[in-house]
Image (cartoon, rainbow, N blue to C red; front, side, top):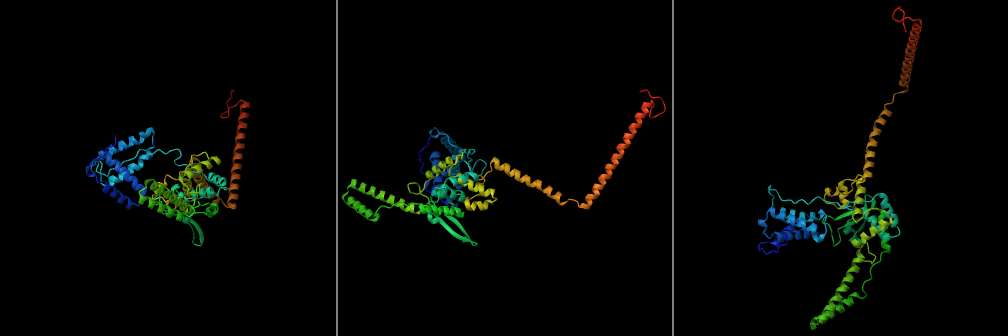
Length: 423
């Protein structure tokens, strides 16, 4: 269905958007999530072209059919059904706010198609592969520290690249020195529930200090403040003379200087830098992971989230509870943790062996504890010998009876009477 233009006068878009924002803000949702929900809701209202009071479940189903077809056939590229989840969640929230019900009288809830997990969706590393990555990056201070931080702190890639040097803390808890990051203190916060403290080991702290010693900071523009003042005076003169080419040149030069200055200030704060000494970005992290996966002969499709899966899996194997893991990972719900740390076939078979190996040890220990005393053992042996002697006596008696029968046959007489026996 083609997109329709909005011509209805009673579509209260500002009020609707503000109502959705207020509801999501109460739920402590991130700013990016709020904007995404508002865009999807606008898309729905543009398509249906009705006031909110007249919307029914048939209109919502019409939008669902249209968006499903659009996402599958857009630019001839087939999308995973996972891409529907965000759009459907936005419309479910809209139906909840404005109380749009289905034919059964309940709040309408769209269910996304069955999720298809890509091959690299839940890839995680083993301890041996993690050690290989550490060994391969020992001569590279930045990558060695970065890999250790990603495994031990479960950071999302957006949280990793926005780490600042000031986020590093050293505290003493119960007389023990602890090292941790304050996540969510930067201006950019990817998740609303990501304000937390994540702990890491002393080895990781030493790796970070080693990286900070060799970290280079971008040089700022010499005499930056004086040059900015000169260019601003130049801009004022051009504005007074209404010289448009000169105004354009002055604004462009001032913008370039300010951008370079912001990058320098940001590089001083950033914990991890790219090869150009700017703050690290997502593409740098992905490229580094792929390069070292090839070097370490790890035949897996690793991505940035693989280290988050790996760290959570290690905690699950150590027997940590969901509440303990949530404090480190920043998850809001325990249901989300169910997709992390699933056992592979080898680990599942090892767990099976461990469980049933422990069960077989129990009766063996009981038999050892209930062993009879030495005096009882001697009495049992004597009785066994008496039984063996009686069995031998019975065998001898049987053999003697057989010999007597053979003798009677030789004489030609039956064993039961005195008549002649014809053999």
